[in-house]
Amino acid sequence: MDIQLTLTDRGNILASGELEEKIKNAAPILATAVAGDPQYEAFQGWRTVDESAGPERVQFLMEHAARVRMDCDAFVVIGIGGSNQSSRAAVKALRPKDGPAILWAGNTISACEMARTLEELDGFRSVYIDCIAKNFETLEPGIAFRVLRQYLEKRYGPEDAAKRIFATGTPGSTLEALCRDNGYTFLTFPERVGGRYSVISDVGLFPMAVAGIDIQALTQGMRDMRDHLFTAPAEENLALRYACIRKLMLEHGYSLEMLAFFEPRLDYFAKWWVQTFAESEGKNSTALYPVVASNSEDLHATGQFIQEGSPILFETFLTVETRDASVVMPHEEKKDYFDYLEGMDFWDMNDAARKATIAAHSERGFPVLEFTIPAIDAHTLGELYYYFIFSCYLSCELLKVNPFDQPGVEGYKHYMFKNLGKPGAS
Ligand code: PA5
Image (cartoon, rainbow, N blue to C red; front, side, top):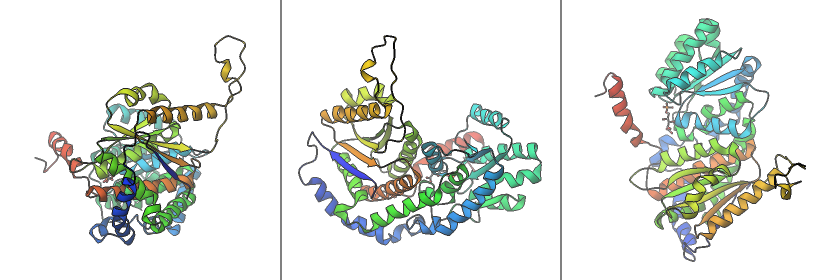
């Protein structure tokens, strides 16, 4: 088990034995999740990992990705929400080298962004795209896909363009029909896997493979984490522990959980975490609002609020153990008053800032959670994905909300489609 979780509760917010009691009472929820809850049968394609991302499928995706990588120097991932967050998080965190540039589209309706993407693509020799959309009714990916495939057709001609177009959707969807009719390559968005859980499928894995991420290691990380969480008893189960701590924080009056970290390359992983928890849990007027602090930058902004603002949040730190880069503070003849740091590595300064932040923030009496991970690599990232997905599922069960739907998202869509004159929208 590569991930460690510690809770510092200097203010004694939790009574002695309170967490243990919560975990004991939640044990049946873990047991049901492990056995497979029949009420969610239609949404559990991600649970085993192998159903949606088994070794054969991973091999298949790697072969397709290798073909793309031989020719492509810009790959555009079109998608929004659960459909693009996981691959973007991995690409930004792992920063694979020697692959095509990965661009993101279909996650905004901004004319400025669409125009910028088209302009940027002109600077690349060979462009490929992948439109990811579960039911292919979502506006953002739909309109971006139309613009980008026309761009490819104009630039390369219809036949060559078709070889450059991938789409990932549900079998039987209108997106599949579009691919079939026009010779695009169609990949699978499994029926039994929802957007937020789709990192465990072609949706997240194909763009990662094109970028050059080792998706064998990543899915092995998922499998290892799954095996651990499915066999660890309730009192030792880290996913259940996290879900129970979060529930207790809510019961003790906290409204926000802030995921804080000191490696900005985790910014998009944190966005994925927000997406996973906010869209899964934010129902029935309950649940923690997930927010993010990318430090040390955010210490100069929200750090003030944490130290002295309304006592509404607790922090969860994500700490990376391995020293993965080194820049040493050089000697300087000119007087700048930073000599006390001469010879010190940026890595150590960052670590000192992290420890200082945890000390200062927990001094206020807020509970502080800390996840420690060995490194930011493909295997660990796979573990983290599965860990947070499974924790989120358990957390939803504790809140008694459906982890797999998102009815609230339809609210704005109703008015937007009406404003846009969509047929049938009133
Ligand atoms: O998690 C979810 O289900 C959502 O965030 C969806 O992924 C998002 O709304 C995009 O949906 P679709 O892939 O159908 O366009």
